[in-house]
Length: 252
Image 1 (cartoon, rainbow, N blue to C red):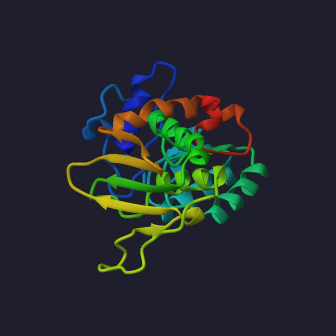
Image 2: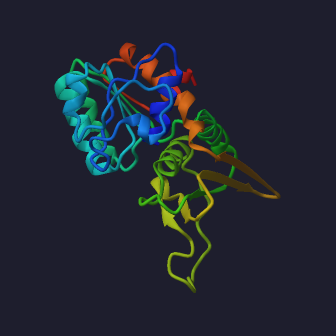
């Protein structure tokens, strides 16, 4: 994801890549990593390189522990943060909201930067009041270490907010433990698949008497996230505090 973001920034005539941070590739020129059209930039060890490079916006696609530190640094040093890392709890987001309200920097945290995924969540939210049962199935590549995904949790939260009138689970006996998935927000079942050959996919399955509705979103390549990332980079300076999700930026 880091390489894809760097390439997207370099390909955009309105943006300039000024720094790259990855503790696993310190000292390597980004051009050696395959970034075409990039200036001479050596990968730095930590976020302090952003300040010396004069960065206005940092884009974070890391892991949750690193993202916590990076967001704290951005808030303290006045660098806007666009964050696609998943794993933040509701309490953490609330605390970050307070922190960025007190900072000169702004933040956008999105469970998913694919515009099709944002629309999928909105459609699920709209459908929820008209059905009796709902389950969410998220499917990702086998390198994703957290489960369920941030997108699945965010979808469940929005569906639960839209309707709380769900039929009870009829299961009284589990032959295999966790066969019914895990209970997400509002008690909505969430199932997580990790499989080679996949990138990022999600199904929201609704059911009522005599009918079902399946809303599915597929990201086949990491470039699917780039229009949303670039949108957030451009908009973040005009969005004070912390914005959660791309919905506000899309106006939905």
